Length: 351
Image (cartoon, rainbow, N blue to C red; front, side, top):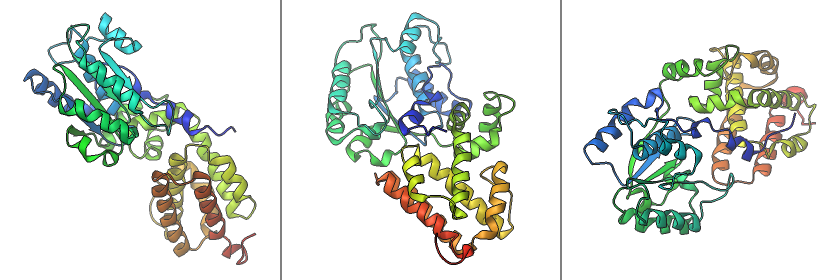
């Protein structure tokens, strides 16, 4: 199977869809924003913070549509069908600008931000709001963030900056302090599952997808729509081969390092944690019942204490990846460590 690149994985974002409706678990946040708009107290800059897949983009787009739609209802929702709504969804509304990096891992540049601030300094062509949606905000380089400060300090009348961030701590304090922050956590599990059941085909397992996505329902939907589940099974077949001394860790690192490593490392950690639970005789698997036969084969081959130590290494590896570690070298270290983890039961040496 071809391993999809991180850039391809980034493109699978159902939360980017334009809809006048917030997601079910966003109703309280939506009502608060709508009430502030009715009272004329909507902030000029709003930082929507939360993990990937909880619907930050969906809420931001619903708010942008509501501000630009001349026929918004009493509940503040856009109509979704008027020319302004259709223009926004098509990316051609003159009073709306969406700023995104040109590719995964690329920054939001100073030129992009300056273009946005110039847009906000002009008169709205339709006589209403001007909205700039910037995502992910932490992708701004230092020059871009500095270019945004003047607009944050002196916003034009009827303008709104919507900053979306999965890692707001990476934003300069000067930017964070000039935005009002709205935290969007993962929804309650039952609410997420109820929504997912209405989005997925009958043969899909929403609980498995939600667990693999870390409780983020839109990320779970991405997994269902892509090749993620097949990729996860392939990853674990490779890990089983390495555990038995039958695979090549360096060749595996070469194949996998261009994939969506944050997702792969999460699936690896979840499966390894289930392996530790099997060794302890405790609890049902959390990484999916489909892996239980494979993990059952591996459980007798690993020492519990060494497995616990390796789980900590995996957790550190995930944090290092957030800090721009060399993906290939990191993966080589972890795969060699995984092979060594099982070496003792294979005769005390690594093949």
